[in-house]
View (tube, rainbow over the protein chains, first blue to last red):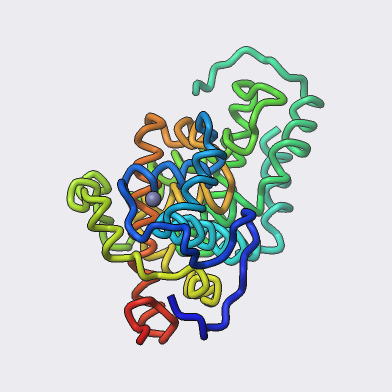
Length: 102
Length: 198
Ligand SMILES: [Zn+2]
């Protein structure tokens, strides 16, 4: 993990260091772990989710990286893809159509 | 839905529901319509059609329930029935096919594991938007519903008429495909990925 890169640190959990000697470098079950992390990020509560999340972020580097990547993707989608300008007269024309249909 | 319905709401109630519960979602509806059709006029028509249908079938809407999900479902159905057929765009890849084709999470992970959160955050709005738009419509739709609009899996299942398990797997697959595209951008723009580090 390069130490020279400029980076914006995202504060989500207490342990936010990008690399930590506490974390193992191999995930035991990428598929299962990542799907769990994604469900937590999607706000779909799973039993004991928070404890499991904390454990994975503390102990597993691939899980840590995946969680932050997935979180970043959700953030940029939300902030950068919802600004499609609505045509000026759309609301007005809908109200007119409803008026006429009455 | 049927044209013949018992009259549930008075004229006044209908106006209240329409203005108070339906109209506030017009921005989200237009954004959804535009990302489905990629055309301003088609998006406008689609939103207008949706609101007309919402008005016609207003008696089948339960006041106080999730109006936004109800409207999104109508819009999605209108898109499939009226727009998708006449679309000039080349046929999109059927998602079933894609789901069978990419069936390994480990392989997905190998391909995108070096994409970094910081690189994604540094990308421009257009890059993110283009990556989303490049997805086949069924994948694009679940991302729009989940990440742009914040619907729950359960709401998405109702909007799309598919089981929750399918919502979950389609969303997971959609995000992996999105990451593939973002990784391509990150590399071509010279953003940091672990592969490039020395
Ligand atoms: Zn792990």
